[in-house]
Length: 143
Image (tube, rainbow, N blue to C red):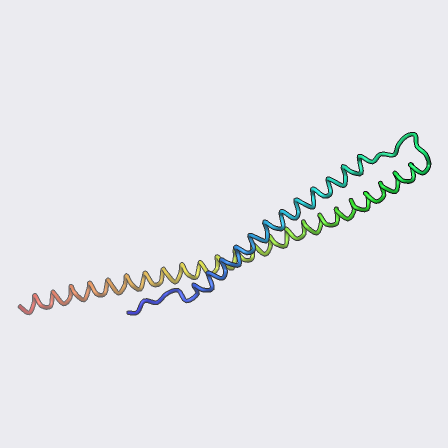
């Protein structure tokens, strides 16, 4: 009997590679999300540090308000980037989950295949042992 391997072994390797790539994408997305959170915090600190002076000229007052407005705009943009980064993490996690499910499905098929091969091999060995026993008994009766 020719030894037959698992025909979906290449598919299983591909599924594992997809899952590894998805894991890498999750790590990258989480790093981007962390950087986005830090950018928001930095803009918040910058905005908090730009208080309006109590005694100032109208030009200084206007300049301070303009600077605060610019920082507030940067903060709003950073918050938007953070939201996009969080969505990206969620999407990458969904892709990782899907890749893991696909890999596990192929692994289950491999496990079933291996179990079937073992049962077939065990049955063939049992039949061979029975044939030897029957043959020996037949020879002993004939002697």
